[in-house]
Length: 303
Figure 1 (cartoon, helix red, strand yellow):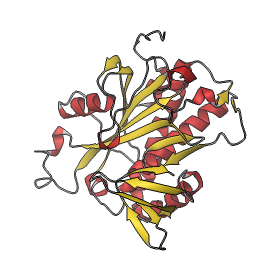
Figure 2 (spheres, helix red, strand yellow):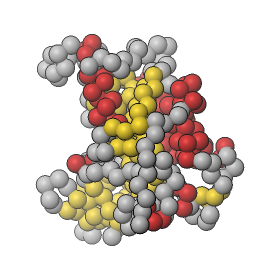
Figure 3 (cartoon, rainbow, N blue to C red):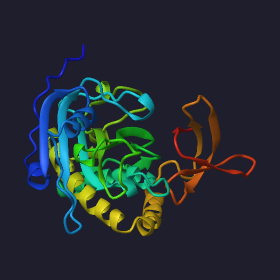
Figure 4 (cartoon, rainbow, N blue to C red):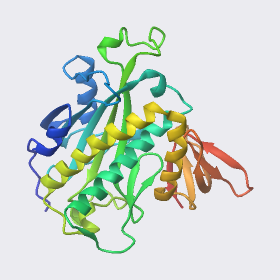
């Protein structure tokens, strides 16, 4: 019989030292929902970006009772084993709503997460159990290892109270908005606690890791710094960064070169080879007849 784990307020000294604001609770329905609520009621504020430096706030919980993924999916996590964090960053509305570049915001979140995990592993002298235990991104929002889901990301746009009415019609392109990036990571789950056969955990693939609390804090610290650095560069030159990001994602794109099936929200599917990303971060899917299709919103699984 599996013993229920008790939630405790996350201790995040390293993250607190680098973030502009940290909110840590033992339990909440969703860290993204809590961050969105606090931004909306003014209890969580982010200062304007000064001299290219972006403010980053963190909302963390040890247990989520209603964790969310993309397209209404549920994110299952366990206290003391899974990191559930949301990172809030204030960026220009013009970039956040520009469909020619805003798809890269999710890709940036994925790259920040890979950097943070790999950096933590290196810091503690841990090592993969197998040479091919590399971390990859499954377009558009999952962290994968050995074809299994180790983590998920969910981004949401929030209009802060200072931006006026909060409606797009009344908003000014010069206004800032807040993007909340939710990141859920299975760090210390044993094989018997995995929520699905398609999921995995970092400790199953890497030996020599520190305690869960140390891992969570070290990863979150790096994510704060990664979001701040990468998003500042993106804001300064979205088009130029998009091309650079496309090359970077190519090296860690798990689906690239595989036969995949895209599942759309209307119930339809499309099968083909994932051959790369477009300039706007959408996926290029080549069907058997040689036709290239653009996939912007879908769940993608390998056949």
